[in-house]
Length: 338
Ligand SMILES: Cc1cc2nc3c(=O)[nH]c(=O)nc-3n(C[C@H](O)[C@H](O)[C@H](O)COP(=O)(O)O)c2cc1C
View (tube, rainbow, N blue to C red):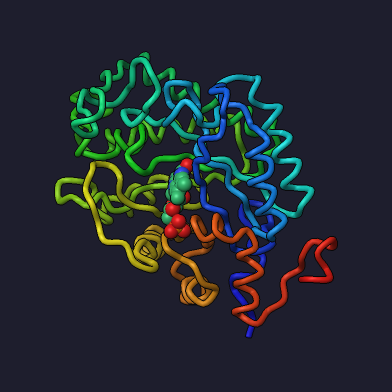
């Protein structure tokens, strides 16, 4: 039996050696609070490349300093960030993986000191600060920051860019009627709420011709929020703009709790793939090779994003291959054990 998980995947001219993607996960390890890559990042990400992950995606990386979730986030708001990121992509490539970066702005969920920004002056919860309602000039500034970040991602040698539009961060806040109460052209109906993401995608594409992914929260877990049907529409609009893959996560737009169980977000990847006819990534409590194989072989998603299981086991691809009875190449240095 041919394994789907270990089959190569070509996306816009980039050939990934397998379908395993390391899901973006903040490490809060810029200890100097300067957004620069540290030894932690080099060790942590390179280990997963050694472990044979096809595509290693670097955590949410802030396009503006006030767009960091915490002061310890990675950044790409300054030319001085490129050098460390370049070292990182070099290590990933040398160890046989492709490299992706998730470009992010935390919006009203930023916990850095100073002013925080959002579409409307509504705090995330009672412990959070009220964001400043962004002016058109603030919006233009963020769009420009994403474009510059895309240019720097290219300079740093990344193969793929993902725009973070999930988990209640800035772009998600504009998309959702729960957080966007604006009355200008960036608020109101879906077309207007999509406008910022649309302009960010265009700005990124003006600097970047490689594969482009967008992560969304395809379920906002609130009747008044965007539905999966809305997200199918949003995915169709993204496809028209030339986005290559939708990475389907959910939640965190507002502080609601929801049920999580193995594969709980896979139906969103499947629905968007089938109805918007665009490639999707599945993520969320996918921990075994069999589970990944089922998702791919049933045509429910194109790539499998693994988060916490890769924190527990950087060699998860080897574990999954063993489970599926297939062989996966390992680093030569480990040949006596692999
Ligand atoms: C420590 C940690 C940090 C995370 N940081 C990010 C992030 O930077 N960007 C993002 O989109 N999701 C982030 N997530 C969510 C993961 O990418 C993933 O979607 C989630 O953990 C569910 O997948 P899993 O069950 O395989 O862990 C983070 C998750 C964890 C555990």
